[in-house]
Length: 453
Image 1 (tube, rainbow, N blue to C red):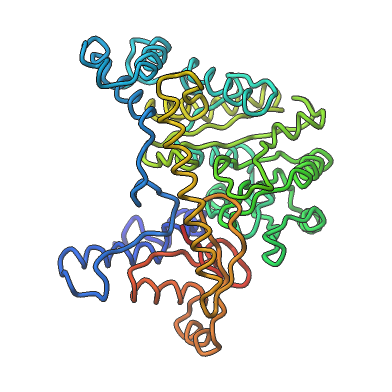
Image 2 (spheres, rainbow, N blue to C red; image 1 turned 90 degrees about the horizontal axis):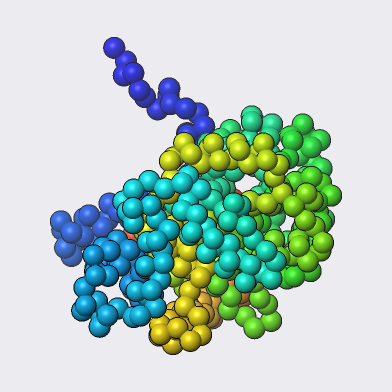
């Protein structure tokens, strides 16, 4: 008998799905890592350096002390009853842990919570958003998730009905979006960021791509904007954001705002503005624009990737639609409680006057300054290397340099049936142990870019 499960009879949507940051290059790197463990000295390098994904603590970044103190106390509440705890933990961490535990039924961090997340933690997140934007936020609009990715999947599941439903996505884009669209059976409608203008987003190109998709019978449901950009690292100008909001309003599109790098701004002439803040400052209210904003504890200065915390804020949806979003969220019961607590801490960190504020601010500033310094050093290094060019790193955690390969290398890539940048990335790995992602994995047209943490 033929096997009951084979690649040929798997869900074709799964086969179509690709996720470059954990793809062929990374899988090969993991094999080489095992080889180094079993056969030391068998390769021309001693370790694998994973630069394929934003995973700061794996590269030595230390967690923020205040956040970890609160987590420890919440996970082991009996510490709060011990006298010596006062000498081991800061007073405001103890106070915050007690405050958080009071919002958790039974003070049990190992129990299920409300499917949107613990109400008290959502209140803290909403207060943080209000403080950041200067416009009110509501805890009922917050869905705490295991990182930002489940929120993205949830919205794709909600919006995509069949292959004729399209989502406008930037190219190059973080492959979570193309993978999620493929898994849910939709159509990715590309709009292209211009490398020559610092990865600029042109409304005229958005309009052109939208009209082209509609002419092919595709019902474009939403626009994805990643700000600061991943993988490209650009920070949108405020005027550009106004134009994007107006475009979504006029075209009846849901605006999906990936804002997980909002703390990672490295240039003085730009700052982060949430799309919700932009929309509200334009006078658009709840009934004017459906908007979903994504945030994560994995990026910024916190870098708590393994804790899997994040949230999405949904505004501009009717009550019946919100009920459906809640239903989808409830299928997974709830996100993990540690991630929920971290999401609340990220949006409500120590304030001036708190015992931990000075050390917290020193840690935060030190991490962000280090990221900015390394981004600039790598950018400068690429621009001095023969055959490389790289745009200015304005934000996020990555560089997306272009490589200018000689004709023979491109021909060798063709002979190996690989995109030129994938061929280069593979050779780089096998020669040095450095893991990068080929730009073609992000949909980049030139196939001559690399994604580097």
